[in-house]
Image (cartoon, one colour):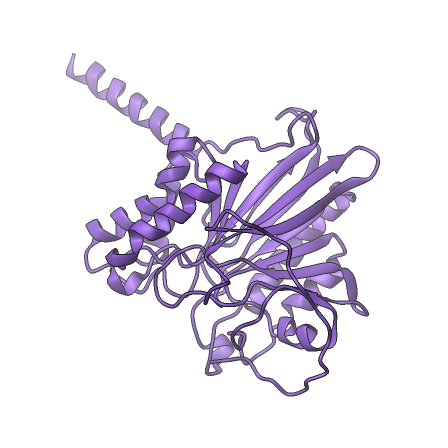
Length: 349
């Protein structure tokens, strides 16, 4: 009898583990639409601000009702996570409203998440313990933890007969000291090699798919393009990009299917820019800072989120439109910024 009970418990635990590990089959609705809300820099853990951050999340989710939420780093302010219990409670605050509304999510780490008692691998295991999380441990032989991809399929796809319309590539940009240089972290060469390999496979198998790359700390090119190309949105602080260029932007250009990059990190920037000469269809966009921890946008720029509305059509493939929704419930039409020709502005570090 004891043996039977033991076997039953083992079987039951395996079922639970399988249910937690099972990923949702994400796909466009019958109208060919799929909406992503980008939440960035929530910074849960600074208790005086957490109530306001939760309020912002609720407002945005009520209005936009996304199909998926993409976290681009700093879900928690790790330095305030003095105990494992507190870190877990803060993480639960960040994703709790999504659990209530049955909204799946994926996340890339920022530079603050693991500055407390729980490190990146601990936090990834915690995030994956939620059945709605689509996050994954990346390969162990490359830098970082949150390096993985998520597929979004066409409306008529099934798990047995699927057509991939969009691939979300989450990358871990670390915290500081890109390749040993002072300043902010970056996506490193071994991660780029992994990205090239995986994204090339998708391009061969699904040549009409659209790729979106998500990571916390922006590449150096975003600052250059702001000054030399037409951009849309606001830049109210110097960009916190790395001092060393590892070649990620060029890798995304060379792929050909990458059309959008989503970053966080800089709390008072929300602009989108591109290089008209190098890759006119590849836009790099900041999110709008969602949370209230640390420093904040200055009114009339309010906390909020970037929304990405995807459209998929059998003939034309996948397209998108994007906007900012703020805590004032405003849908922001981002202002045009003409190139100013400034040369020599360096990344903040």
